[in-house]
Length: 387
Image (cartoon, rainbow, N blue to C red; front, side, top):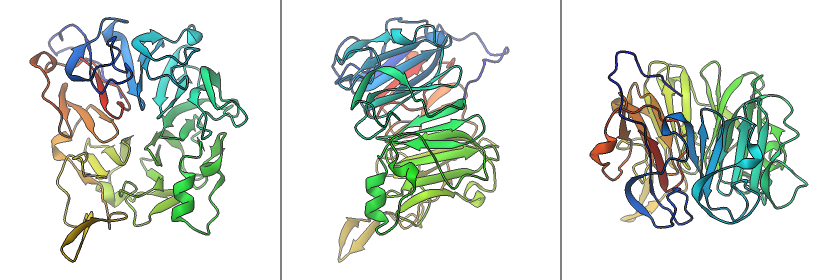
C-alpha cells in the first residue's frame, strides 16, 4: 500500500533508513550483533528513498528497492538469505543470484524466504523441513532461490507463516504448501481427514474458495487468510487466540468473517501478526482481533471477549477465547500504512509513525513527515523504518 506525496505538502526531510530491536544474528544490518534499544540509521546500501518494501522473518531481514533489487541480512543457517552459503550476514547484501530479475515482493517465514518476481514467478530458499519451500522432493534446505515449478500461473501475492506459505494467482486462486498447520489440525480435529492443502509439501489449491477471487493472502504463525475482490475476508487454521473470529478451535477450510463484524463495510486491506489480525475497510476504519496479552490489539478487551476463566479464585488461561470479534480502533481511522510484527503493530497516520501498541519512544529526528512505509511484516522482535 503505497502513497505518493501530495504536491501541496512541504518537501520532506532527506530520506533515511532506521532499524532497532533484537539483533542476535545481525538482522538489523548495522554490522554487529548487539541489540539496539533506539532507532539507528543504516549506512546507505541503497538510496533510502528508493526502498519499496521491508520485511523480516525469525532472524533475517529483506529489503526490496523500487528497481526490484533484493538486499538481505541476518540469520542464514538454513540459507534463507539466498546467498549461496549459510553464514550469518551483518550488513544488507544484494542477492546476486537474482541480479537482472526484478523482485516485486518478499515474504519471510521463520527460517525460509518466499520471493515473488516482477513477472509473477515464485522462488524460495531456506529450510524445507516442513515442505515450506514448495519443493516436495528437494533437499532439507536450499541456499539459492529456486523456482516453485508447480505454480505455473502468474502470482500476484505471497505470504509466509511459521512453517507454511501461500500464493494468490492473477485469476484469484489461492495455493498453500508446508505442513505447519497440520499438527494443530490433527490435534484439534480428531477423526477428521484434513484437506490436502494443509499437509502438502508442494503448492496445493485451497478448497472452499471456489466462488471467490482472491487478491491478497496473509499468514500468521499457524493460520492463513485471504482477501477477495469483493471485500470479503476468509480465514482458516488455528484459532487458539481467537484470531479467526470463530468459536471453533481450528478451521480446516476457509470460513468467511461475516460483514457485520466490519460494520457491513468491504475490507480493502488485511495484515497478520503471529496470532492477531488487522483489517482496514473501504471508509478507512481499522479493526483488530485475536491475541491481546501483549497489547497487540491496541485497545482494551470488550466484555464479551473473555480470555480467562476464573476457577475457584484462580485465573487460568482458556484453551481459546470464548469469542474474539473485530473491533475498530478509532485512533487509526484513515491510516495510510499498517504493518504487523509477531505481537506488535506499526501504523502511519497523517504521514507520522503511530505505535498501535506500546513501543519505546522514537527520537525527535524520526517524528517528521514519512515518505513511504511498506513493510508487510517486521520481524518478531525487530523493526525497520524509512523516514
